[in-house]
Image 1 (tube, rainbow, N blue to C red):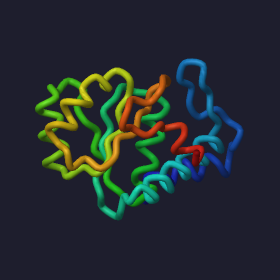
Image 2 (image 1 turned 60 degrees about the vertical axis):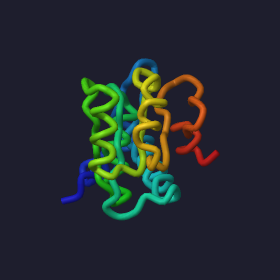
Image 3 (image 1 turned 180 degrees about the vertical axis):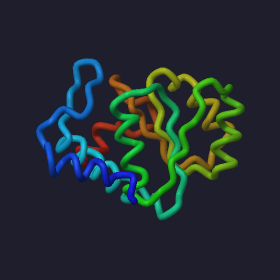
Length: 147
């Protein structure tokens, strides 16, 4: 069974039904499936290969939900990072898992300089917050839209 099997079934049965609500954002099953497919394709385009680790450091959100579906869709491995860890512990986990990509939200963006210093091999950081992407990161929404 594939982790995205439930999503595919929901799109078949109820494509216009609401799947996620986060703040003022609502997305249907069809919209989420499209976004997940685009994110999976974008990850592959960034060089994420089969079995590569993709980390997420952030609070629960609709974008976290999309990450949870897109990474397996891209045939990569999920690496959710414990939000209670210190920057040193986060660096250790990223290095130990050999994570290639890190998604990070606004709540944890302030840790990014320390993470980059401790793990300079981190290839790509994707900002999932609503504000402008910090320097040296890719914007989540621009990545999905293909901008």
